[in-house]
Image 1 (cartoon, rainbow, N blue to C red):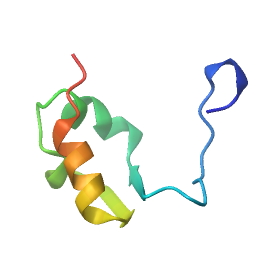
Image 2: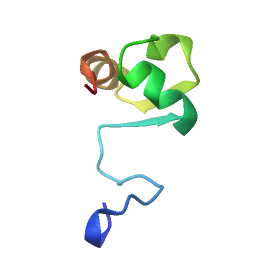
Image 3: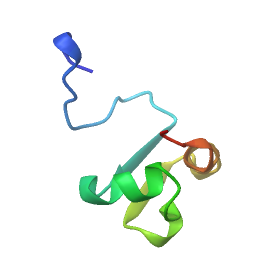
Length: 60
């Protein structure tokens, strides 16, 4: 995260996993109205770790 709370695209070299998705789809799967598995979400790195994180996301 950039100063002031802005998000910048990219990855951190020592991150366990990177999750990439379509911003317009996030409100659906981020609020559990749709599964992230049914949307355009890609995982690179530790897939088990990223999957556990994505399964726990519930923005209410």
